[in-house]
Image (cartoon, rainbow over all chains, first blue to last red; front, side, top):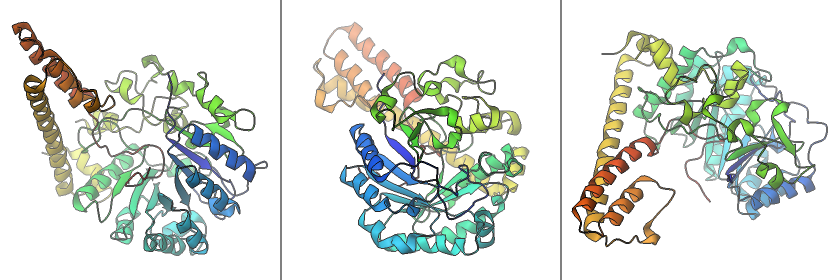
Length: 339
Length: 124
């Protein structure tokens, strides 16, 4: 079966100017042998050859690489959508350049009110920078998405954060912090707290106009709720099916959130991206999924074959198994809420 | 009536009983809209196939990725070419099958997005 690559999320560098307490990549220092500019350009060409739609440059902090404008230019010249995910610290410095490359969207991490955000980011003033960056982007007509990664630390901040973001004109993407990299497992949301966040998202969607504040649960939210509107039809994890992650030293993985080098399928220094993508033995966990692949949490679920056990990175991180995600609306409603 | 446990969970983030009622109401309404819309599509494609079809399918109007309504149209268009009574029964049966296929496969805008950073509109 041929798979069509839709989106590549690229850890452009592991170097970072912050040390966030939930960072799954434990970013800070660049990897010892990150791709050169020439290798990055070649990789962009390979992505275009595979007719990839979206390339998201993230990190670490992508704007810490001096050659980001060349790579951004290459991505847009090749007709692919350019996205950035950034902590916002350097946006004021580069706003003119960013506008020049016309990104589809820039994601800015915004994790709570000023005190909470600065605590998580480990830097005083980080909130003001991120907040200002969103305004700068909106002023330039660039679509911005505030990305909030929720843990016990900022769980209670969501209402206050909504007041900050509301009517800014940006999107709001809410996702769950998972215990890998720097993140301390003790701060992981319980299933009930996770479901409370989902209720919060749903209530905000009903209360606020989508134009004023589009609130979106990230890919780690979901699966076949009987209560929450619109939560049907999850078709399984897209890692290796329509998306890939790229590490800054050229490793190809289904999803960067898997946080484990054993899932690297190949390296663009050793083989062309096309060969890695088209190798039928790669991304086995998803491409060779069968009903029996479902883990104990999902094997008896009536939605199992379709949803394939939810987000595989969450599933693996929490249970050391794929297709076994315990953070699932359907099972929470069945086992805890007892609907 | 709202489940106590659901209320307790909602209260963790100040999601009120009224908010939960509103969520449940929206969910029921969106499900209802979906069923009604699906039924209307089935009926319309049935009528279209019955009156417009001559046993051939206009390839240009067929979207293989879009699934249901077109598939329903195909069934009805194909079957309506015949005047035989058996084919009329086939139209009804196939439309019913198409209806249930649609129920199982029609994509609904979900709360969760795919892996990546969220953007409202695709540029490319």
